[in-house]
Length: 183
Image (cartoon, rainbow, N blue to C red; front, side, top):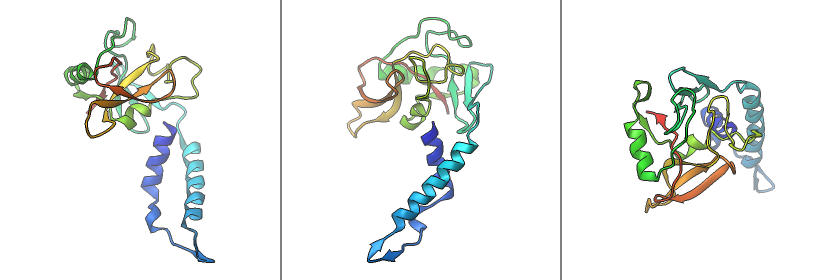
């Protein structure tokens, strides 16, 4: 989540292509300036990050207070509010249909994009599942589908793996979990 927020701040406040180019001994020093700005913005983002990045809306949804993305709190097979129960794994097509048909909190839902689901990773977590367990209790430490294909053939999709804390390429026929995001 840190890097997603950092990227948002950098894109919002700085266009690197508009930085001046300095020629010293026939060397271009735009890169040096970019590094200085990156360090400066990193300090700004780290000091301005909220202590509690998620808000429980009390209706089975969680809002990321930084990005304003609304997430499904509990996944299929679990109770909407407590996340008790056995989570259900599904292939990509089933996950896509599940999110499209989810009627939670009167919102329309979809599978998250690669960047969105990856932003939920919390690599500082000491739990098996690398996610904020307060906001997303009983999250399975396994892969979660994104709507982003790995190539133009769209037979393999990006998934975020909450045990390893990384992304994986996963064939659409394999099983994973779906955590939907509101449209």
